[in-house]
Image (tube, rainbow, N blue to C red; front, side, top):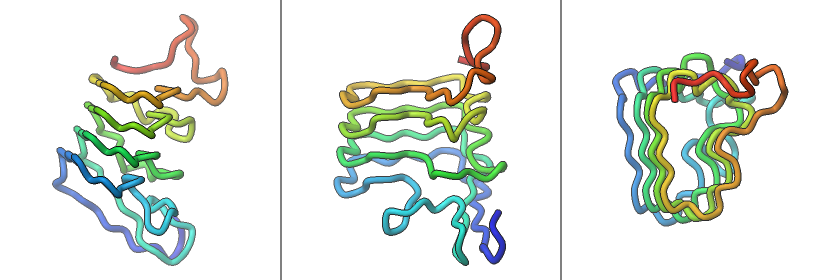
Length: 136
């Protein structure tokens, strides 16, 4: 976590559903900048117990995850459900490498712009069978 940051922890949040929020473009952002964590003197949001996230009819959503993620945020994520998010292109970008290890359910429905589910940055993440380490 960057120095001078204030940590805001959603300690009990296990399930999150965001639905039909027409002007939302990102799950974690303030003024088009990532929220978790900031490199300035700002807040860091942490979701250590979040197990499920549902994003439904978020037509302007272009990004789900912050550019940088703290070790204790999103690490317990088990289920991701995304439906009718028309502008979303990547589900798990490469900067989240390893964060989907606990994931055992992934549902993506009617997201016509999605180009990448798991973006792999380097070949070290690919195991001997040609895949990545997940519970899926």
